[in-house]
Image (cartoon, rainbow, N blue to C red; front, side, top):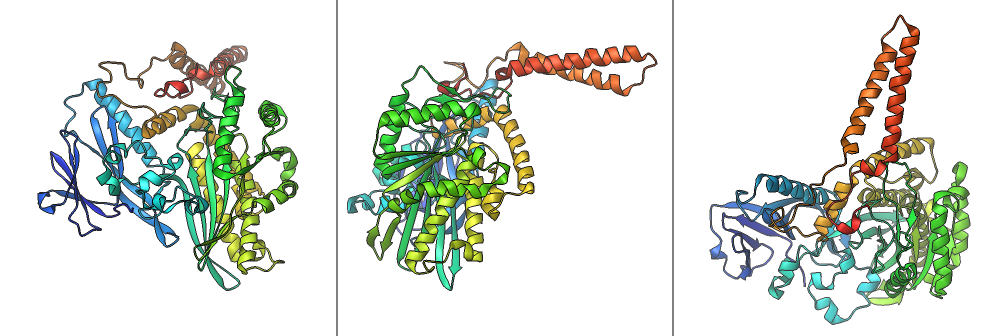
Length: 588
Protein backbone atom coordinates (compact mmCIF):
# COMPACT_ATOMS: atom_id res chain seq x y z
CA UNK A 1 0.00 0.00 0.00
CA UNK A 2 1.51 3.32 -1.11
CA UNK A 3 1.89 6.39 1.08
CA UNK A 4 0.52 9.81 0.12
CA UNK A 5 3.29 11.78 -1.55
CA UNK A 6 1.59 15.14 -2.09
CA UNK A 7 -0.38 16.98 0.58
CA UNK A 8 -1.43 20.43 1.72
CA UNK A 9 -1.13 21.38 5.36
CA UNK A 10 -3.69 23.90 6.64
CA UNK A 11 -2.71 25.41 9.99
CA UNK A 12 -5.28 26.93 12.36
CA UNK A 13 -4.86 27.87 16.03
CA UNK A 14 -6.67 24.67 17.09
CA UNK A 15 -5.96 22.08 14.42
CA UNK A 16 -3.66 20.85 11.68
CA UNK A 17 -5.61 19.82 8.55
CA UNK A 18 -3.66 17.64 6.10
CA UNK A 19 -5.34 17.24 2.72
CA UNK A 20 -4.07 14.49 0.40
CA UNK A 21 -3.82 16.00 -3.08
CA UNK A 22 -2.76 12.80 -4.85
CA UNK A 23 -6.17 11.16 -4.43
CA UNK A 24 -9.77 11.97 -5.43
CA UNK A 25 -11.26 10.68 -2.19
CA UNK A 26 -11.46 14.07 -0.41
CA UNK A 27 -9.36 12.64 2.40
CA UNK A 28 -8.45 14.94 5.30
CA UNK A 29 -6.24 14.05 8.26
CA UNK A 30 -7.08 16.21 11.28
CA UNK A 31 -4.72 16.63 14.24
CA UNK A 32 -6.26 18.45 17.20
CA UNK A 33 -3.55 20.69 18.70
CA UNK A 34 -5.35 20.84 22.06
CA UNK A 35 -6.60 17.29 22.70
CA UNK A 36 -3.86 15.75 20.49
CA UNK A 37 -6.46 13.47 18.86
CA UNK A 38 -5.74 12.26 15.31
CA UNK A 39 -8.66 11.41 13.01
CA UNK A 40 -9.34 10.80 9.32
CA UNK A 41 -12.30 12.42 7.53
CA UNK A 42 -13.77 12.06 4.05
CA UNK A 43 -15.20 15.55 3.82
CA UNK A 44 -12.92 18.25 2.49
CA UNK A 45 -15.49 20.90 3.40
CA UNK A 46 -14.33 20.77 7.02
CA UNK A 47 -11.08 22.48 6.04
CA UNK A 48 -11.34 26.20 6.90
CA UNK A 49 -10.58 28.76 4.21
CA UNK A 50 -8.23 31.73 4.33
CA UNK A 51 -5.69 30.07 6.66
CA UNK A 52 -1.98 29.39 6.33
CA UNK A 53 -1.34 26.60 3.79
CA UNK A 54 1.90 24.67 3.23
CA UNK A 55 2.76 22.16 0.52
CA UNK A 56 4.25 19.06 2.14
CA UNK A 57 5.50 15.73 0.80
CA UNK A 58 5.33 13.50 3.84
CA UNK A 59 5.03 13.30 7.59
CA UNK A 60 8.25 12.63 9.46
CA UNK A 61 6.10 12.04 12.53
CA UNK A 62 5.50 13.44 16.01
CA UNK A 63 8.06 14.05 18.75
CA UNK A 64 7.28 15.13 22.31
CA UNK A 65 9.45 17.85 23.88
CA UNK A 66 9.06 20.07 26.94
CA UNK A 67 6.70 22.47 25.16
CA UNK A 68 4.53 19.55 24.07
CA UNK A 69 4.19 17.56 20.83
CA UNK A 70 5.77 18.76 17.58
CA UNK A 71 4.62 17.71 14.12
CA UNK A 72 7.56 17.15 11.76
CA UNK A 73 6.78 17.52 8.07
CA UNK A 74 8.80 17.27 4.85
CA UNK A 75 8.57 20.59 3.00
CA UNK A 76 11.17 20.04 0.28
CA UNK A 77 12.45 17.05 -1.63
CA UNK A 78 14.57 16.26 -4.65
CA UNK A 79 14.26 13.22 -6.87
CA UNK A 80 17.50 11.23 -6.96
CA UNK A 81 16.32 8.70 -9.53
CA UNK A 82 14.21 5.60 -9.98
CA UNK A 83 14.55 2.01 -8.82
CA UNK A 84 12.36 -0.52 -10.61
CA UNK A 85 10.46 2.42 -12.06
CA UNK A 86 9.66 3.91 -8.63
CA UNK A 87 10.78 7.44 -7.75
CA UNK A 88 13.27 7.82 -4.87
CA UNK A 89 13.47 11.16 -3.07
CA UNK A 90 15.97 12.87 -0.82
CA UNK A 91 14.67 15.10 1.98
CA UNK A 92 15.96 18.66 1.47
CA UNK A 93 13.62 20.65 3.72
CA UNK A 94 11.68 20.02 6.93
CA UNK A 95 9.69 22.00 9.48
CA UNK A 96 8.80 21.46 13.13
CA UNK A 97 5.32 22.67 14.14
CA UNK A 98 4.54 22.88 17.85
CA UNK A 99 1.03 21.91 18.94
CA UNK A 100 1.09 24.61 21.64
CA UNK A 101 0.72 28.17 20.42
CA UNK A 102 2.73 29.68 23.29
CA UNK A 103 5.28 28.62 25.88
CA UNK A 104 3.65 30.44 28.80
CA UNK A 105 3.16 27.08 30.53
CA UNK A 106 6.95 26.69 30.83
CA UNK A 107 9.23 28.36 33.33
CA UNK A 108 12.36 30.19 32.19
CA UNK A 109 14.67 27.20 32.56
CA UNK A 110 12.23 24.93 30.72
CA UNK A 111 12.04 27.40 27.82
CA UNK A 112 15.84 27.27 27.56
CA UNK A 113 15.88 23.47 27.75
CA UNK A 114 13.10 23.15 25.17
CA UNK A 115 15.01 25.43 22.81
CA UNK A 116 18.00 23.11 23.14
CA UNK A 117 15.85 20.02 22.50
CA UNK A 118 14.45 21.65 19.36
CA UNK A 119 18.01 22.44 18.23
CA UNK A 120 18.94 18.79 18.70
CA UNK A 121 16.09 17.54 16.53
CA UNK A 122 16.85 20.15 13.87
CA UNK A 123 20.51 19.13 13.96
CA UNK A 124 19.62 15.55 12.98
CA UNK A 125 17.11 16.71 10.37
CA UNK A 126 19.87 18.81 8.79
CA UNK A 127 22.11 15.76 8.21
CA UNK A 128 21.19 15.90 4.49
CA UNK A 129 21.05 12.13 4.07
CA UNK A 130 17.41 11.15 4.58
CA UNK A 131 15.66 9.28 1.77
CA UNK A 132 12.18 7.96 1.14
CA UNK A 133 9.92 6.40 -1.47
CA UNK A 134 6.14 6.33 -1.22
CA UNK A 135 5.68 3.34 -3.52
CA UNK A 136 8.80 1.18 -3.11
CA UNK A 137 10.42 -0.23 0.01
CA UNK A 138 13.99 1.10 -0.05
CA UNK A 139 14.77 -0.40 3.37
CA UNK A 140 15.00 -3.91 1.86
CA UNK A 141 17.45 -5.34 -0.63
CA UNK A 142 16.08 -6.64 -3.91
CA UNK A 143 16.70 -10.20 -2.81
CA UNK A 144 14.71 -9.76 0.41
CA UNK A 145 11.85 -8.10 -1.48
CA UNK A 146 11.55 -10.94 -3.97
CA UNK A 147 11.79 -13.56 -1.23
CA UNK A 148 8.42 -12.57 0.22
CA UNK A 149 4.79 -13.65 -0.05
CA UNK A 150 1.95 -11.75 -1.79
CA UNK A 151 0.54 -10.96 1.66
CA UNK A 152 3.75 -9.16 2.55
CA UNK A 153 3.52 -6.94 -0.53
CA UNK A 154 -0.04 -5.94 0.38
CA UNK A 155 1.01 -4.79 3.84
CA UNK A 156 1.31 -1.05 4.55
CA UNK A 157 4.75 0.31 3.72
CA UNK A 158 5.68 1.07 7.33
CA UNK A 159 4.74 -2.44 8.52
CA UNK A 160 6.85 -4.28 5.97
CA UNK A 161 9.84 -1.95 6.14
CA UNK A 162 13.04 -3.30 7.72
CA UNK A 163 12.85 -1.68 11.14
CA UNK A 164 16.66 -1.65 11.34
CA UNK A 165 16.79 1.08 8.73
CA UNK A 166 13.71 3.17 9.59
CA UNK A 167 14.90 6.30 11.38
CA UNK A 168 11.48 7.79 12.16
CA UNK A 169 9.98 4.59 13.55
CA UNK A 170 9.27 6.07 16.99
CA UNK A 171 7.88 9.27 15.44
CA UNK A 172 5.23 7.57 13.29
CA UNK A 173 4.04 5.34 16.14
CA UNK A 174 1.01 7.51 16.94
CA UNK A 175 -0.14 7.32 13.31
CA UNK A 176 0.63 3.59 13.04
CA UNK A 177 -1.70 2.81 15.95
CA UNK A 178 -4.66 3.57 13.68
CA UNK A 179 -4.86 1.21 10.70
CA UNK A 180 -6.73 3.74 8.55
CA UNK A 181 -3.76 6.13 8.79
CA UNK A 182 -1.26 3.77 7.15
CA UNK A 183 -1.08 5.96 4.02
CA UNK A 184 0.42 8.71 6.19
CA UNK A 185 3.08 6.49 7.79
CA UNK A 186 6.15 7.21 5.68
CA UNK A 187 9.31 5.20 6.52
CA UNK A 188 12.39 7.41 6.20
CA UNK A 189 15.89 5.97 5.80
CA UNK A 190 19.22 7.57 6.68
CA UNK A 191 22.14 6.69 4.45
CA UNK A 192 23.02 7.23 0.81
CA UNK A 193 21.30 6.72 -2.55
CA UNK A 194 22.82 7.45 -5.95
CA UNK A 195 21.28 6.56 -9.30
CA UNK A 196 23.42 6.99 -12.43
CA UNK A 197 22.51 6.45 -16.07
CA UNK A 198 25.59 4.83 -17.59
CA UNK A 199 26.65 3.73 -21.06
CA UNK A 200 29.27 1.10 -21.83
CA UNK A 201 30.02 -0.04 -25.39
CA UNK A 202 26.74 1.48 -26.56
CA UNK A 203 24.64 -0.27 -23.91
CA UNK A 204 22.63 1.97 -21.54
CA UNK A 205 21.86 0.81 -18.00
CA UNK A 206 21.11 2.16 -14.54
CA UNK A 207 23.84 1.98 -11.91
CA UNK A 208 22.61 2.36 -8.32
CA UNK A 209 24.27 2.32 -4.91
CA UNK A 210 22.21 2.35 -1.70
CA UNK A 211 23.65 2.46 1.82
CA UNK A 212 21.25 1.89 4.70
CA UNK A 213 22.40 3.04 8.14
CA UNK A 214 21.05 0.98 11.03
CA UNK A 215 19.08 2.91 13.65
CA UNK A 216 20.03 0.42 16.39
CA UNK A 217 23.14 1.39 18.35
CA UNK A 218 23.34 4.54 16.26
CA UNK A 219 25.56 7.42 17.23
CA UNK A 220 28.88 9.13 16.85
CA UNK A 221 32.36 7.78 16.31
CA UNK A 222 33.75 7.48 19.86
CA UNK A 223 30.52 7.27 21.84
CA UNK A 224 29.17 4.28 19.93
CA UNK A 225 31.51 1.33 19.52
CA UNK A 226 31.14 -2.45 19.56
CA UNK A 227 27.81 -4.16 20.16
CA UNK A 228 24.92 -3.98 22.62
CA UNK A 229 23.23 -6.80 24.54
CA UNK A 230 21.00 -7.56 21.52
CA UNK A 231 23.98 -8.01 19.21
CA UNK A 232 23.44 -4.76 17.28
CA UNK A 233 26.76 -3.35 16.08
CA UNK A 234 27.69 0.32 16.03
CA UNK A 235 28.04 2.00 12.62
CA UNK A 236 26.29 -0.91 10.93
CA UNK A 237 25.61 -0.12 7.28
CA UNK A 238 24.15 -2.34 4.59
CA UNK A 239 25.32 -1.32 1.10
CA UNK A 240 23.64 -2.61 -2.05
CA UNK A 241 24.91 -2.19 -5.60
CA UNK A 242 22.18 -2.55 -8.25
CA UNK A 243 22.41 -2.76 -12.04
CA UNK A 244 19.22 -2.40 -14.11
CA UNK A 245 19.53 -3.41 -17.77
CA UNK A 246 16.26 -3.65 -19.66
CA UNK A 247 14.00 -6.06 -17.79
CA UNK A 248 16.95 -7.60 -15.95
CA UNK A 249 18.17 -6.44 -12.52
CA UNK A 250 21.07 -7.61 -10.40
CA UNK A 251 22.09 -6.78 -6.86
CA UNK A 252 25.27 -7.22 -4.78
CA UNK A 253 25.14 -6.61 -1.01
CA UNK A 254 27.89 -5.92 1.54
CA UNK A 255 27.82 -4.93 5.20
CA UNK A 256 30.08 -3.08 7.58
CA UNK A 257 29.96 -2.78 11.36
CA UNK A 258 32.03 -2.22 14.46
CA UNK A 259 34.01 -5.16 15.87
CA UNK A 260 31.16 -7.22 17.42
CA UNK A 261 32.44 -7.24 21.00
CA UNK A 262 31.80 -5.11 24.06
CA UNK A 263 34.47 -2.44 23.71
CA UNK A 264 34.76 1.30 24.21
CA UNK A 265 36.94 4.17 23.09
CA UNK A 266 35.73 7.26 24.92
CA UNK A 267 37.38 10.58 23.91
CA UNK A 268 39.83 12.07 26.40
CA UNK A 269 41.70 14.72 24.35
CA UNK A 270 44.21 12.15 23.11
CA UNK A 271 44.42 11.89 19.34
CA UNK A 272 43.73 8.15 19.49
CA UNK A 273 42.17 7.04 22.78
CA UNK A 274 43.05 3.46 23.64
CA UNK A 275 40.25 0.94 22.91
CA UNK A 276 39.05 -0.73 26.11
CA UNK A 277 37.59 -4.23 25.96
CA UNK A 278 35.07 -4.99 28.67
CA UNK A 279 35.89 -7.81 31.08
CA UNK A 280 32.54 -7.59 32.88
CA UNK A 281 30.20 -8.47 30.03
CA UNK A 282 29.63 -11.75 28.21
CA UNK A 283 31.59 -11.30 25.00
CA UNK A 284 30.60 -14.67 23.59
CA UNK A 285 26.88 -13.96 24.01
CA UNK A 286 27.10 -10.62 22.16
CA UNK A 287 29.22 -12.18 19.40
CA UNK A 288 26.81 -15.09 18.93
CA UNK A 289 23.72 -12.83 18.89
CA UNK A 290 25.27 -10.56 16.27
CA UNK A 291 26.21 -13.34 13.89
CA UNK A 292 23.01 -15.28 14.40
CA UNK A 293 21.23 -12.22 12.98
CA UNK A 294 23.86 -11.74 10.26
CA UNK A 295 23.57 -15.33 9.05
CA UNK A 296 19.77 -15.22 9.21
CA UNK A 297 19.64 -11.99 7.14
CA UNK A 298 22.49 -12.59 4.70
CA UNK A 299 23.73 -16.17 4.77
CA UNK A 300 27.41 -17.08 5.00
CA UNK A 301 29.85 -14.50 6.36
CA UNK A 302 33.39 -13.58 5.37
CA UNK A 303 34.73 -11.27 8.06
CA UNK A 304 37.32 -8.90 6.59
CA UNK A 305 39.19 -7.39 9.53
CA UNK A 306 41.40 -4.47 8.44
CA UNK A 307 42.68 -3.53 11.91
CA UNK A 308 46.37 -3.05 12.67
CA UNK A 309 47.85 -6.23 14.12
CA UNK A 310 50.26 -4.20 16.24
CA UNK A 311 49.82 -1.17 18.46
CA UNK A 312 46.62 -0.04 20.14
CA UNK A 313 44.38 -2.02 17.75
CA UNK A 314 46.13 -5.33 18.40
CA UNK A 315 44.05 -6.23 21.47
CA UNK A 316 40.85 -5.88 19.43
CA UNK A 317 42.30 -8.12 16.72
CA UNK A 318 43.28 -10.81 19.23
CA UNK A 319 39.92 -10.83 20.97
CA UNK A 320 37.96 -10.83 17.70
CA UNK A 321 40.03 -13.72 16.34
CA UNK A 322 39.60 -15.65 19.60
CA UNK A 323 35.81 -15.32 19.44
CA UNK A 324 35.74 -16.55 15.85
CA UNK A 325 37.86 -19.58 16.73
CA UNK A 326 35.74 -20.36 19.79
CA UNK A 327 32.51 -20.14 17.76
CA UNK A 328 33.54 -22.94 15.38
CA UNK A 329 30.80 -21.79 12.99
CA UNK A 330 31.04 -23.21 9.47
CA UNK A 331 29.12 -20.17 8.13
CA UNK A 332 31.87 -17.78 9.25
CA UNK A 333 35.29 -17.30 7.68
CA UNK A 334 37.71 -14.82 9.24
CA UNK A 335 40.17 -12.93 7.01
CA UNK A 336 42.54 -10.53 8.83
CA UNK A 337 44.45 -8.04 6.69
CA UNK A 338 46.72 -5.42 8.29
CA UNK A 339 45.80 -2.60 5.89
CA UNK A 340 48.31 -0.02 7.12
CA UNK A 341 51.21 -2.46 7.22
CA UNK A 342 50.52 -3.99 3.81
CA UNK A 343 49.85 -0.67 2.06
CA UNK A 344 52.49 1.49 3.75
CA UNK A 345 54.57 3.86 1.59
CA UNK A 346 51.51 4.23 -0.66
CA UNK A 347 51.77 0.64 -1.93
CA UNK A 348 48.03 0.37 -2.47
CA UNK A 349 48.56 -2.14 -5.25
CA UNK A 350 49.10 -4.66 -2.44
CA UNK A 351 45.34 -4.68 -1.83
CA UNK A 352 45.36 -7.32 -4.56
CA UNK A 353 46.74 -9.69 -1.90
CA UNK A 354 43.46 -9.38 0.00
CA UNK A 355 41.33 -9.69 -3.12
CA UNK A 356 43.16 -12.88 -4.07
CA UNK A 357 42.43 -14.36 -0.64
CA UNK A 358 38.69 -13.84 -1.00
CA UNK A 359 38.20 -14.30 -4.75
CA UNK A 360 36.77 -17.81 -4.35
CA UNK A 361 34.38 -16.57 -1.66
CA UNK A 362 33.09 -13.82 -3.92
CA UNK A 363 32.59 -16.22 -6.79
CA UNK A 364 30.76 -18.56 -4.43
CA UNK A 365 28.50 -15.85 -2.99
CA UNK A 366 27.57 -14.49 -6.42
CA UNK A 367 24.85 -11.88 -6.68
CA UNK A 368 21.06 -11.67 -6.93
CA UNK A 369 19.66 -11.75 -10.48
CA UNK A 370 16.08 -11.39 -11.66
CA UNK A 371 15.01 -11.39 -15.31
CA UNK A 372 11.49 -10.39 -16.24
CA UNK A 373 10.15 -11.33 -12.82
CA UNK A 374 11.97 -14.69 -12.79
CA UNK A 375 14.74 -15.13 -10.18
CA UNK A 376 17.77 -16.68 -11.88
CA UNK A 377 20.42 -16.38 -9.15
CA UNK A 378 20.70 -15.45 -5.48
CA UNK A 379 23.50 -14.11 -3.32
CA UNK A 380 24.44 -16.76 -0.76
CA UNK A 381 26.61 -14.74 1.62
CA UNK A 382 28.15 -11.35 2.32
CA UNK A 383 31.45 -9.75 3.15
CA UNK A 384 31.30 -8.03 6.54
CA UNK A 385 34.15 -5.52 6.56
CA UNK A 386 35.50 -3.53 9.48
CA UNK A 387 38.39 -1.34 10.55
CA UNK A 388 38.48 0.69 13.78
CA UNK A 389 35.82 3.17 12.58
CA UNK A 390 34.39 1.09 9.70
CA UNK A 391 34.92 4.13 7.48
CA UNK A 392 38.10 4.86 5.59
CA UNK A 393 39.87 1.52 5.13
CA UNK A 394 36.47 -0.19 4.93
CA UNK A 395 35.32 2.16 2.14
CA UNK A 396 38.36 1.33 0.02
CA UNK A 397 37.93 -2.44 0.30
CA UNK A 398 34.18 -2.34 -0.25
CA UNK A 399 34.64 -0.34 -3.45
CA UNK A 400 37.12 -2.92 -4.76
CA UNK A 401 34.71 -5.76 -4.06
CA UNK A 402 31.91 -3.79 -5.70
CA UNK A 403 33.98 -3.23 -8.87
CA UNK A 404 34.73 -6.93 -9.14
CA UNK A 405 31.02 -7.74 -8.77
CA UNK A 406 30.02 -5.05 -11.28
CA UNK A 407 32.40 -6.52 -13.81
CA UNK A 408 30.85 -9.97 -13.36
CA UNK A 409 27.35 -8.52 -13.69
CA UNK A 410 28.15 -6.60 -16.88
CA UNK A 411 29.82 -9.65 -18.39
CA UNK A 412 26.74 -11.72 -17.58
CA UNK A 413 24.52 -9.08 -19.25
CA UNK A 414 26.75 -9.29 -22.33
CA UNK A 415 27.78 -5.64 -22.06
CA UNK A 416 31.42 -6.60 -21.44
CA UNK A 417 33.24 -9.61 -22.87
CA UNK A 418 35.07 -12.09 -20.64
CA UNK A 419 38.38 -10.32 -21.32
CA UNK A 420 37.16 -6.76 -20.75
CA UNK A 421 37.27 -4.89 -17.43
CA UNK A 422 35.29 -2.04 -15.91
CA UNK A 423 38.51 0.01 -15.78
CA UNK A 424 38.70 -0.09 -19.59
CA UNK A 425 35.43 1.86 -19.90
CA UNK A 426 36.56 5.38 -19.02
CA UNK A 427 33.14 7.01 -18.47
CA UNK A 428 31.82 4.03 -16.52
CA UNK A 429 34.94 3.82 -14.37
CA UNK A 430 34.73 7.54 -13.57
CA UNK A 431 31.07 7.24 -12.58
CA UNK A 432 31.80 4.16 -10.48
CA UNK A 433 34.64 5.82 -8.58
CA UNK A 434 32.72 9.01 -7.88
CA UNK A 435 29.61 7.17 -6.67
CA UNK A 436 31.65 5.09 -4.22
CA UNK A 437 33.63 8.11 -3.04
CA UNK A 438 30.38 10.00 -2.47
CA UNK A 439 29.03 7.00 -0.57
CA UNK A 440 32.18 6.98 1.57
CA UNK A 441 31.81 10.68 2.37
CA UNK A 442 28.14 10.30 3.30
CA UNK A 443 28.77 7.37 5.67
CA UNK A 444 31.70 9.18 7.24
CA UNK A 445 29.84 12.46 7.83
CA UNK A 446 27.01 10.62 9.57
CA UNK A 447 29.37 8.84 11.99
CA UNK A 448 32.55 10.91 12.32
CA UNK A 449 31.34 14.37 11.25
CA UNK A 450 33.66 14.81 8.24
CA UNK A 451 34.10 13.36 4.79
CA UNK A 452 36.01 10.10 4.48
CA UNK A 453 39.78 9.74 4.37
CA UNK A 454 41.54 7.99 1.49
CA UNK A 455 38.86 9.02 -1.04
CA UNK A 456 41.59 10.17 -3.44
CA UNK A 457 42.24 6.45 -4.02
CA UNK A 458 38.53 5.73 -4.43
CA UNK A 459 38.10 8.59 -6.92
CA UNK A 460 41.33 8.23 -8.90
CA UNK A 461 42.62 4.73 -8.23
CA UNK A 462 45.85 6.01 -6.70
CA UNK A 463 47.05 7.65 -3.50
CA UNK A 464 48.20 11.28 -3.91
CA UNK A 465 50.04 13.84 -1.81
CA UNK A 466 47.10 16.23 -2.15
CA UNK A 467 44.90 13.46 -0.80
CA UNK A 468 47.25 13.06 2.18
CA UNK A 469 46.96 16.78 2.93
CA UNK A 470 43.18 16.65 2.65
CA UNK A 471 43.14 13.65 4.99
CA UNK A 472 45.24 15.61 7.48
CA UNK A 473 42.71 18.44 7.50
CA UNK A 474 39.79 16.03 7.91
CA UNK A 475 41.62 14.24 10.73
CA UNK A 476 42.09 17.55 12.57
CA UNK A 477 38.42 18.47 12.12
CA UNK A 478 37.42 15.01 13.35
CA UNK A 479 39.57 15.50 16.46
CA UNK A 480 37.81 18.76 17.29
CA UNK A 481 34.31 17.42 16.57
CA UNK A 482 34.80 14.13 18.37
CA UNK A 483 36.17 15.77 21.52
CA UNK A 484 34.13 18.97 21.78
CA UNK A 485 30.85 18.49 19.86
CA UNK A 486 29.98 14.80 19.76
CA UNK A 487 28.23 14.79 23.12
CA UNK A 488 25.63 17.10 21.61
CA UNK A 489 25.50 15.04 18.41
CA UNK A 490 25.04 11.80 20.34
CA UNK A 491 22.27 13.32 22.46
CA UNK A 492 20.59 14.61 19.31
CA UNK A 493 20.53 11.16 17.72
CA UNK A 494 19.22 9.50 20.90
CA UNK A 495 16.46 12.09 21.22
CA UNK A 496 15.54 11.77 17.53
CA UNK A 497 15.35 7.97 17.64
CA UNK A 498 13.31 7.89 20.84
CA UNK A 499 16.11 6.36 22.93
CA UNK A 500 15.45 9.23 25.32
CA UNK A 501 11.87 10.40 25.86
CA UNK A 502 11.26 13.92 27.16
CA UNK A 503 8.62 14.26 29.83
CA UNK A 504 6.51 17.42 29.73
CA UNK A 505 6.96 17.82 33.50
CA UNK A 506 10.73 17.64 33.21
CA UNK A 507 12.50 19.98 35.63
CA UNK A 508 9.45 19.75 37.90
CA UNK A 509 9.19 16.03 38.63
CA UNK A 510 12.85 15.37 37.80
CA UNK A 511 15.85 17.51 36.83
CA UNK A 512 16.64 18.09 33.17
CA UNK A 513 19.72 16.02 32.21
CA UNK A 514 20.91 18.73 29.84
CA UNK A 515 22.03 20.80 32.82
CA UNK A 516 24.96 19.24 34.64
CA UNK A 517 27.43 20.72 37.07
CA UNK A 518 30.96 20.96 35.70
CA UNK A 519 33.98 20.20 37.84
CA UNK A 520 36.10 23.23 38.85
CA UNK A 521 38.87 22.04 36.54
CA UNK A 522 36.58 22.53 33.52
CA UNK A 523 36.47 26.27 34.14
CA UNK A 524 39.74 26.97 35.98
CA UNK A 525 42.41 25.16 33.98
CA UNK A 526 41.62 26.64 30.53
CA UNK A 527 41.61 30.15 32.04
CA UNK A 528 44.92 29.54 33.83
CA UNK A 529 46.41 28.16 30.63
CA UNK A 530 45.31 31.15 28.55
CA UNK A 531 46.68 33.61 31.12
CA UNK A 532 49.99 31.77 31.46
CA UNK A 533 50.40 31.34 27.70
CA UNK A 534 49.56 35.02 27.06
CA UNK A 535 52.07 36.19 29.65
CA UNK A 536 54.72 33.93 28.13
CA UNK A 537 54.11 35.46 24.67
CA UNK A 538 54.24 38.99 26.15
CA UNK A 539 57.51 38.17 27.91
CA UNK A 540 59.01 37.05 24.60
CA UNK A 541 57.76 40.01 22.54
CA UNK A 542 58.52 42.86 24.98
CA UNK A 543 62.26 43.58 25.24
CA UNK A 544 63.74 43.76 28.72
CA UNK A 545 67.03 45.39 29.66
CA UNK A 546 67.62 42.68 32.19
CA UNK A 547 67.90 39.58 30.03
CA UNK A 548 68.10 37.26 33.00
CA UNK A 549 64.76 38.56 34.32
CA UNK A 550 63.15 38.16 30.89
CA UNK A 551 64.40 34.58 30.69
CA UNK A 552 62.97 33.94 34.15
CA UNK A 553 59.59 35.37 33.10
CA UNK A 554 59.61 33.23 29.97
CA UNK A 555 60.54 30.11 31.90
CA UNK A 556 57.96 30.80 34.61
CA UNK A 557 55.01 31.58 32.37
CA UNK A 558 56.02 29.03 29.73
CA UNK A 559 56.42 26.39 32.40
CA UNK A 560 53.06 27.37 33.95
CA UNK A 561 51.28 27.00 30.61
CA UNK A 562 53.01 23.65 29.96
CA UNK A 563 52.04 22.33 33.42
CA UNK A 564 48.45 23.55 32.97
CA UNK A 565 48.25 21.94 29.54
CA UNK A 566 49.58 18.70 31.01
CA UNK A 567 46.90 18.81 33.74
CA UNK A 568 44.20 19.39 31.11
CA UNK A 569 45.57 16.42 29.19
CA UNK A 570 45.63 14.30 32.35
CA UNK A 571 42.04 15.24 33.15
CA UNK A 572 41.02 14.90 29.51
CA UNK A 573 37.59 13.40 30.18
CA UNK A 574 36.60 16.51 32.12
CA UNK A 575 36.90 18.67 29.00
CA UNK A 576 35.27 16.60 26.27
CA UNK A 577 31.63 17.17 25.34
CA UNK A 578 29.89 14.12 26.77
CA UNK A 579 26.36 12.79 26.17
CA UNK A 580 23.83 13.62 28.86
CA UNK A 581 20.52 12.06 27.83
CA UNK A 582 20.90 8.29 27.55
CA UNK A 583 22.30 7.00 30.84
CA UNK A 584 23.95 4.02 29.17
CA UNK A 585 26.26 6.41 27.30
CA UNK A 586 27.58 8.29 30.30
CA UNK A 587 31.28 7.91 30.95
CA UNK A 588 32.06 6.68 34.44
